[in-house]
Image (cartoon, rainbow, N blue to C red; front, side):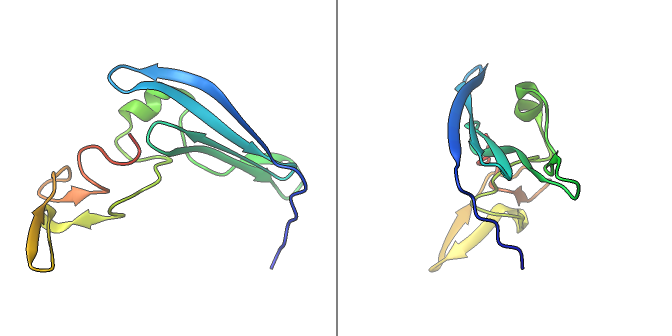
Length: 121
């Protein structure tokens, strides 16, 4: 097991773009000497996670887009912090305490990763 002690972490925020109908999108950057994480306020999207590789260079280990439009038009949930449901709900229906709930379907007859507008938006 590897233990890394982070002596100093910096947290910064910068404006990253504007989405019609959704508003301003910021990028929060959490950074130490060993790790850098970028999170967008478009819902909660992990844009990048960079860590030191075998030879000490910083490497991004997350699939993502270089621009805001990529995330806005994304159909594959790249970087999405998946909430509500992290898979498919068959026919978009489930029952809790004898009450049936119907979700929006977005994957044929099923609800995938939270419906029409997941936490990534």
